[in-house]
Image 1 (cartoon, rainbow, N blue to C red):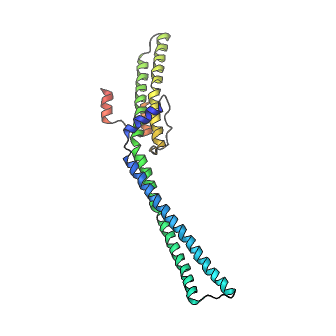
Image 2: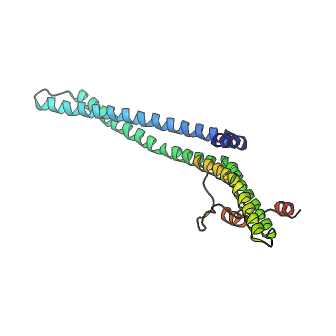
Image 3: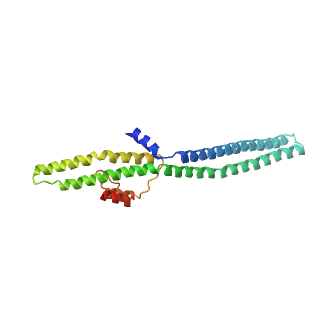
Length: 221
């Protein structure tokens, strides 16, 4: 059933917003990695320049005093390398922001793209519960004057309700798929998620999906 559900779910969604969001995230991550790499290299260059100036001091202490020009040039390289390393580290730090924004945009895209699949699953649950409600009503009208007819009506009701479980579970499969793919449930967990057998009213209350005028008219027809 899962393969069938996945195939049908694909017909309900448009992946283009996902592809765009994924591409934007990949670009932001690549730019951040490049900036971090450049900052890391600049830091190594700074360390090397600093070590070269320290070595110059050691040489002077050992009696090999460097010229003013060499000292100034070595010191300037170390200072310049420090400034450049600090600059690139700041650039890399700023570029983390676009990555976070792209991650949030991708999460929002996943939620929106998979919303139709979640709604389809909810619709299947509600429809199965509606049919189960109908079976229960008909069972009430089927009570007979003898224990045998009463038992037969109860058995028919139970079989009808149980037969609808597959449709209800199929709705769950669509919901589970949507949630795995990034759709965020929009219902507050103040109510217990209906189990089977369910009722249409409980399903609609839990999923915050009131019947439309068209649905009401169709049910009354």
